[in-house]
Length: 373
Image (cartoon, rainbow, N blue to C red):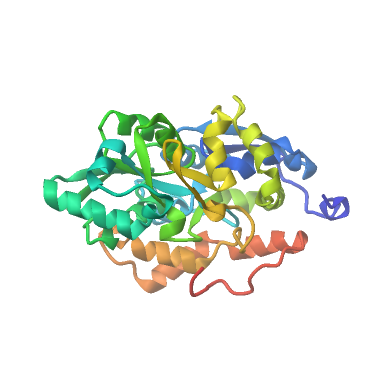
């Protein structure tokens, strides 16, 4: 903490903030910032509120119940566009995490794919092709779940299916379920598989109801996952408070990037007041040691969660435009390129990231667009 820098910050228009988050492993920066006293270091009194669905967390922020929240990377754009059932301008100046998702199939479906055991068999193309063979054989339309239509999860799921020529709109059905309902729905046979953030893949594996078929990092490494979201109007009225909140969370992300801190983070997250889950469920993804099947086929994926390095926090506008393009089938039409660029520039506030990064002496890109991660 740089006391002299903090003393020179513009005052917070309000110091008491309500911040919404989800019961997910990559909520870690939001939670550890509280436990490490980072919010209070920046003069903020933050209360954390756990929600059960992405629609809930978005709607509560729009209604003013939350000052800010953890949000799916594409969700703010979709909401600003009015494509998510509600129209409201949402912005983000900080990406909280990259990657972090898995695609899990029911154990019964996996057994029909006849894939040999071993950590190397969970290649996305291999598993997708095996699934295609089973679909052709059974002539049965499978049902998969994603956490929200406008999420990285939906994009990953569609990309994975399309790798093997499976049409995600006709050969499969994709429904929306809250993360916490995924495991039970899989066990009950309501769905055949899902794409969700951790720890819900690991919980399905541990319960024996699912097999982690592949991971998001193997499909799109560096995919923007969660962002810190605020209403555009809220930022206009509270730029000082917003800056302090970003600074605290950027320090938390930097702390999370140190693998030596991960076990402490796991113990914090597991507490009843936060995720209220056994530490053993949180450990696989946060240490990068994931099991694909119960107690077997462990693979090392150190970049499964990325919180800070590789410019993780920077809200690349090229990533945002890429996501918008991929959502064309769900939108029902192609967004005009100029309108898409205007939307991205409004929602992905690179200027806000650079403002905070400069104060923390964090190097950040000078350009808003990149070719690829």
